[in-house]
Length: 89
Image (cartoon, rainbow, N blue to C red; front, top):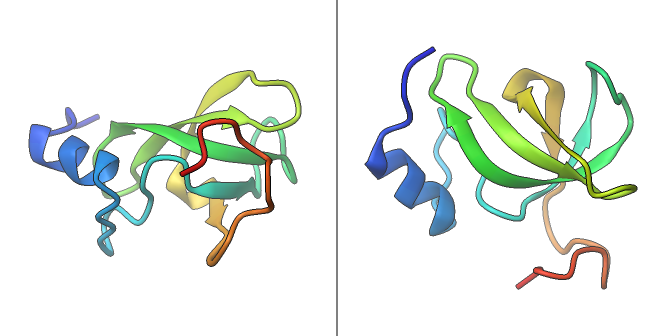
């Protein structure tokens, strides 16, 4: 696992997405595999670098968190549902 660079972490928290790192803080996600398939979650932190970056996510249903690879996440584009996360911008 490659350590997360300061540049990558800054981009994550500033909402800058790239092909290699396609998520930003508070992105609304669906988990498509792993321990909680179908669960809705929010990107909280970048945990590891590509080729399959891992993100710390917070599950919408119970507030628990987990580290999930990008290959098991799907980002919802556009507006997230109103009021689903207290720290939503």
